[in-house]
Length: 117
Length: 111
Image: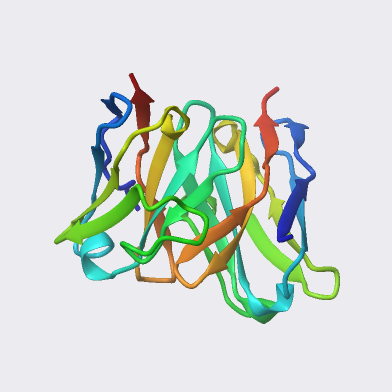
């Protein structure tokens, strides 16, 4: 069974940092692009970042560029999101997703990040 | 990167059909046949329902169908069932720098 399990969410103060992790199983992780998508409370889904197989291409939504870094460890079958200089508007459930072609499947259950003092 | 435009809500009675629109621009929806649709029951993981405009993954009922005309994509749910009540989001490849954009979301209510 293909599965993605996120971890690392929590409460952090504005300006702080947090690192999210996503452990993959049930598929050949190294063959796929991976993605982070978030959903702020009461809001819609927002694509955050993509990372190519091997990790040499990374793309970000403009609002997180320069603050967030996506990375992967194919040996550990894991993808990460390092989030620095966090703002209140980064508060959201963060989903780890496998990208297949131009679509996203499956999705993890998500991990909640709350940025508040 | 503005969100694609979806109606905030849609509704229908059991057995009826409902269509949800997703409007973008020639830089995203209109420029590529890379539109996908997701069903999201709050508190659960979103689920892929349609990819590449009109293709249905295995396991998704054929009551769900997708189409596109110009800058607007559509998701049609036929033979509405109670379990179809959820939030639905479209997504499109947005070209430049390998970016993607989601729709604003539509809450589907089965009356």
